[in-house]
Length: 417
Image (cartoon, rainbow, N blue to C red; front, side):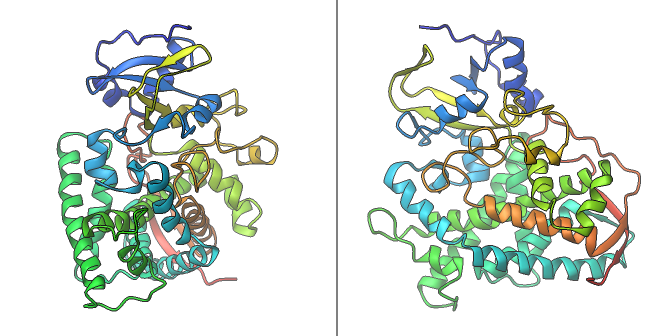
């Protein structure tokens, strides 16, 4: 049996909060390993990094997600009873519901709705001195997601509901005030959505049968039972909230265009580089650092012993920058996708493995499509300036975001060519 290096700290929770995204990678480099032991939140934990570790982590026979996510995340980001904490047949049935909502037609429609709201926003932005892109795109995406999902939102409450989604995301990796704001936002948002689910079931509101609100409201689990209104609300928020979260990637899209202006010309004139550019933004600027699972039963891997019930963390940040998988991994280079090999275990911006079987985010296709639309809007449908601001990216922050949230000014819509 091979000894798993032990982190020198008796309890590493404070270090995790201090170092954030780089916590696991820093220790892997320190101990010259891709696996080590530590204590996090008073619990023995094994941390893993790299493609081989990801292949292990997504072995459903060896790991379970039930009870793996820290309570801080469940109470803020995921919600109790959501798909993220399910396994086996229960997970596959629930996941199928999400995948059925991610058809090519659904992706195209959501993207089209987002483009409509981008155009409306740009018209309004030209009358404003400055725009904070991150918060503005949150509203664009939230409006588009509600429209796509069939969720009715009154004009006087749309900002409040959007802010609740944003608070859940921002508080997921925070403590103190950020954490409690996220919990309050989740409580309010779940109550709002549970009321809508019950209104659909009670025929008090009319929703098209193809819309997500209708389909989630009437979804039956692996036992053939309707989800409770509370769990149905959690799953509806698992559609709306991640769409709002994509606004962070859009802020990083703008940052990448600003820091690498040569790409602006290429992206403005052609769709050829859209996919590589967006994928490189996702690789470099993934905003959550790791995923959690628990060991199902005792086993050995490469001589290392994993004990039943042990929590295991997979380093997303470090795996996406692993020099064994990526050339010059710390550089922003969209051209790498023409020659470097990408697979479901070395490229993990939203999880890895198989979408239908593993716990890989089913909204990944929505993310890519909405990011591409953001690139089109920023390079082809408007002009703007970037005023002086603090664009520093603090990788200790979870979830990460440019300090200024990316401010633009002097916006002028451009008519489509």
